[in-house]
Image (cartoon, rainbow, N blue to C red; front, side, top):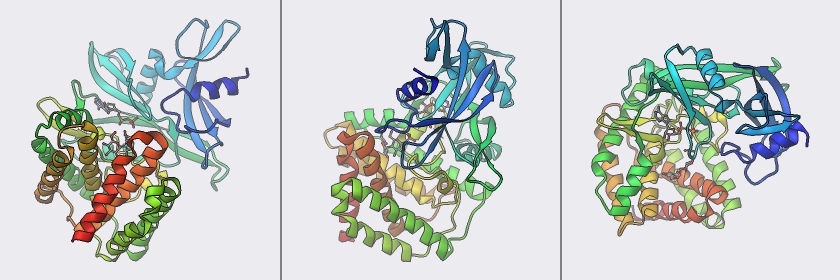
Length: 418
Ligand SMILES: Nc1ncnc2c1ncn2[C@@H]1O[C@H](COP(=O)(O)OP(=O)(O)O)[C@@H](O)[C@H]1O
Ligand SMILES: O=P(O)(O)O[C@H]1O[C@H](CO)[C@@H](O[C@H]2O[C@H](CO)[C@@H](O)[C@H](O)[C@H]2O)[C@H](O)[C@H]1O
C-alpha cells in the first residue's frame, strides 16, 4: 500500500476526520519540518462538496513496533506526532511557552473535533494545547476571541498563553499562499466537568438546574460585554442584515433537502425569518458562535468558563469570523437546555428545560454586558439553530433528529400563539 492510501485509511479512523460518509481523495499540499524531527503534512481532501485541508504532523519511528502507526514498512513506521511527547513539548515551545517545568503530556480522549494535549508542570496539569486538525485561511476565531478576552481580564475563559500560524500554497489566492492557525495554548483548568454532563444528570434526576442556568447567563453576558468593547463591532446595515438572512435561508434549503420534516415547515420558518429581518437590528459584534452546554466548563468553586470559540463546524470559516448577533449565543443555550431535557430522560424533561430557559433569559436580560433581548430576533435565531441541528443530527446522530425537530415545532407554535 502506498503512503497516501495508508494515510487515507488511518485518517478515516480519526474522530477529527470531517469527511464521514465519503471515501477520502487525498493529495499532499505541503510538507513542512516541525519540532522533534516531525513533518507537518498539509493534506487536502478533495472528495467532499468543499475541499478540506487537514493538519497531519507525523514522525518517523525507528521501529514498527510502536503505537499510533499511520504507515509502516521495512522496520520503520510513521506515527501520529501529536501523541509523541517531544513533538508536543516542541510545539508548546514554538507557541512561546516556557517548557522548562513541563514534566509530562497526554492527549485528551473524548468527542473532539481537534486534538488537545494536556501538559503537567511539576506533576500538576496546568497547560492545554489545542492542535487544529482542519486548516483555513485567516486566524482561527478561537484564537482571536480568547486572546482578546484574556487580555481584557475576563474571568469567564481560561487564560490564553500563545498560538502558532503557518502558510501554505494556495493557487486560488492572488498572493499564491494562505495563512492560518495551527494551534493555540491556554491555561488547563483541573477538575472541571462540562455543562452538558452536569445538566444531563440533573435533567435525568429531575433536579433543579436554574441556579446554574442563572450563573451561566451571567457568564455569557459578561463575555458579550467584554467582546463588544475589545473587538470590532459593525452597524447592521441593510446589506449586512441581508447577508445574515441569506445564510439563514441557505441553511434552511440544505436542511429541507436532507430532512423531509424540515421541508414541510419551510414556509412557516421563513415567515419568522421575514419578521426578524424587518425588525430594527442591534450593533453586531464577536460572539461565541456555537454555544451549547458542551462548551461550558464548571470549575470547582470558581464558576463557569466558556471554551471553543471556533463557531459552528458546518459554517464556512470566513462567515464565522464576522461580527454577529449576541442573541445567537443565547439561542444556542436555550436549545441546549431543550436537548438536555429531552436526552436526560427525566420524568418531565420539557418542564425541566422550560424552567432553565426562563431563568436563563431573565438573568441574561439584567446581567452586566448583555445585549438587548428582541423576542422576534431571538425566535428566528432559535429556529436557525434548530435547523442547523437538524442537519447536524441527520448527518451524525440520526437517533437524535427528533430533538431539533420538536424544537422547530415549539418555536413555530410559540409564534402562532403570540
Ligand atoms: N482550558 C481547559 N481546561 C480543561 N479542560 C479543557 C480546557 N479546554 C478544553 N477542555 C476540555 O477539552 C474538551 C474539548 O475542548 P474544545 O475546545 O471544545 O475542543 P474541540 O473544538 O476539539 O471540540 C472540553 O469539552 C473540555 O473537556
Ligand atoms: O463539536 P462541537 O462541540 O463544536 O459542536 C457540534 O456538536 C454538538 C454535539 O456534541 C452539537 O450540539 C448539539 O448537541 C448537544 C448535545 O450533544 C446540545 O447540547 C446542543 O444544544 C446541540 O446543538 C453542536 O450543535 C455542533 O456544532
